[in-house]
Image 1 (cartoon, rainbow, N blue to C red):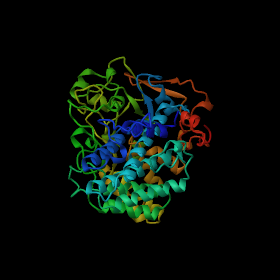
Image 2: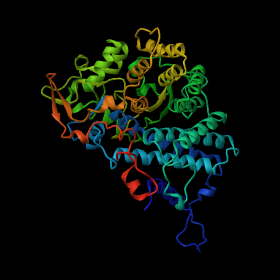
Image 3: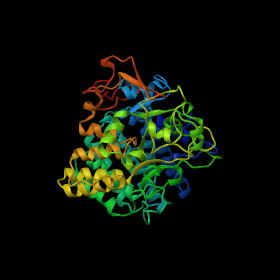
Image 4: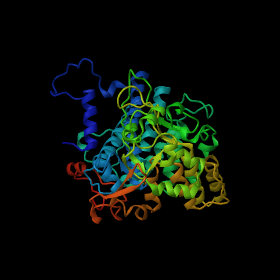
Length: 515
């Protein structure tokens, strides 16, 4: 048996039939081409490029479900406790090294690394413009992937080429070497001159990795490394390019099907609105409101098919948002109270009970965004938008001593939110803006860990879960977790566990502390 990394290599090797069962058999297999000679034309190189984007899209559910459940602002949700035990365990911090969500994310991240490594090692960038661009894309994807692996696991194996069978059991990586690879990949992708750029902020036909997206990945990685002045410089270049601007429509409509490739989005995974060739994504149904318990008339009016109510916002999040913003335009376009939902015709059926506390996500609602095919959505997943770049740059500038620039950037976000400008900013101001502006976008969890705020916020989670009734009362029930089996534990939860099966099969990898 092989580790996950090895399995990915073995599967691709079999797909390309690079080995035969009998070494003396010299007859070429019809219809199969060796990986050593496959990338000989631009058309074949484009298939390799497409594979990167498909594998990135496959990570969407982990980004929008796994990480938000760990940041303390969301209940697991669903119909009742136990509706999805894996999500319950994530939100309660009762998961272990066998957890399917964490194992799946690890596996899929290394699948993307393998695809990137195959391109970088087998395609000569000097071959053609398509080859140059594809190699640059692969380096940007690999940099982003290792950012995730490093910040979530700490010292993941460094794999920078397609592995041979005797290399499958890779040891933990050295964080300094891992970050050096991320930096080098970003620098080479950016300087390649091959990544496209938008002609202006409203151009919508640039769907590939752009130079500015690669710069944003690099600036974010430098901030995590504490290289604040360097981070600020790179992120400033993204902002100063004027290739992007904050979304100019209704705040709550930014992430709808009608606003794909809008002026704010740096990179998004495409879910085409093509009923004849639908792309499965269960995420929309998972995150949608628990519609079987809501008034049918309101659901019909808003064009909603169905939803299962997972990853439901907490009342603590709503109350903190209200205290920070007041009853602002941004709050109203991000989260709705139950009374506001009732005013829109979206209340509960009389006598119905719904897991949560009577607050509902609005900005990423799923209305008229699904194809006629079952379990398919036509709404893209946005991996990064300009608002995040502004806030990353604000933090980098503040840490580098440039408070005036940090204040300028924070006030750009506050102006769009329609709340008063600040005369100066602190790190806490930036933390607050990131929490509310990027609410349920999968960014906060890694920030909490980096800032050292995770233990204080998350140590008490996992004991009880709320049920909201149509009469607006809330009852809480015991999740059944002992104190030592739930909640954030210092010395353990700073990093994810390596998947248990990976550790069992790979004696060169050491499990993270506490697992």
